[in-house]
Image (cartoon, rainbow, N blue to C red; front, top):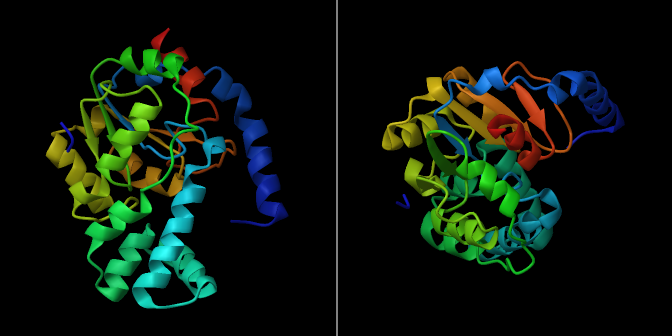
Length: 241
């Protein structure tokens, strides 16, 4: 089925990470015993940020904006960032402010090289061991997600792969986008867990009753973040041990 901050901010994040470290290191397995629906973001979650796939995507986004609305590179880059901050994705901004058809954009910006991605057999084993339903939900496209999963050796582990197109191009962090995907999947968020690198995208899942895991090198403190990890494989290993 295919269905940015100053030194003070960085210091606060580092302090939060040190303060949370003892709890996170002893992450209670009991927090997840009720979970039977495991929802994973794709980019910088199911592969490490060091892969820098989004560097390629951002270059293509900027070029697409230049070509589509006839602006120079500096302005296109500014708009790309502005739309991401305001609407959740650059695509959502282009659709809202320029009436753009998303189909060509989705194909174009995800046409990137994945040759340097490495398979992660340990991660695959731990995902396979999770009890219940496992899905991927990305603000990218489902075909792009399938390509990345194949490159990482994670194909055939998930019951469904959803892209932004399945929420009628409404992006995370919009609560309505999550509700649309969960309705399609018949997923009960009360027995769900959400794994995400973008903390904004954990607020709605938390409000819907999910356990939330922020997958990123830098911990953040927010009421809607239950857990933090900079190593998804190790985190899942604790859950499946």
